[in-house]
Amino acid sequence: MTYAKDAAPPFYHGTRADLSVGDLLAPGFGSNYQAQKLSWIYFSGTLDAAIWGCELAKGPDDCERIYIVEPTGAFEDDRNLTDKKFPGNPTAAYRSREPLRIVGEVESWEPHPPERLKEMKDFLARLEAEGDMKIID
Image 1 (cartoon, helix red, strand yellow):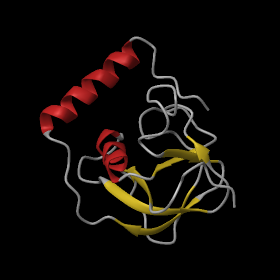
Image 2 (cartoon, rainbow, N blue to C red):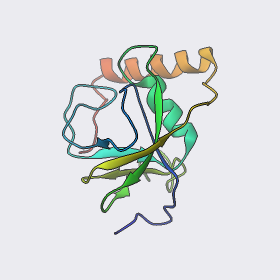
Image 3 (cartoon, rainbow, N blue to C red):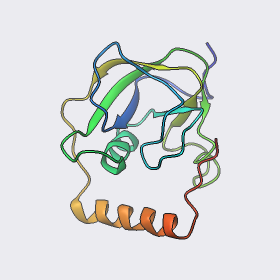
């Protein structure tokens, strides 16, 4: 299995999808943030990035989930963040064309403060309005 440079488990995927241990998260669906179908599945090596993932994902407010995932194949640094928005890969953001297997769920986590979450949602809405919400797929 090929790993991105310096990648080490555990890995997380934040979403609003209600899934179970053993289920596979696969590419080919819309992203958490927009309808664009993606040929990659995205995940992170940091819990904070996964918290942002589930908090910012579209879907029911009462269905925020953070899954502990295991890549089933090769993966690479997420080119949307690595060296584009942040030098290196401080968010430990990755992507794979192979499914991720759910091996657990983070049952308890601390959400971002409401004012910080609103700032981020407002920022993303501004990017979308300006047509700058492109995902490098």
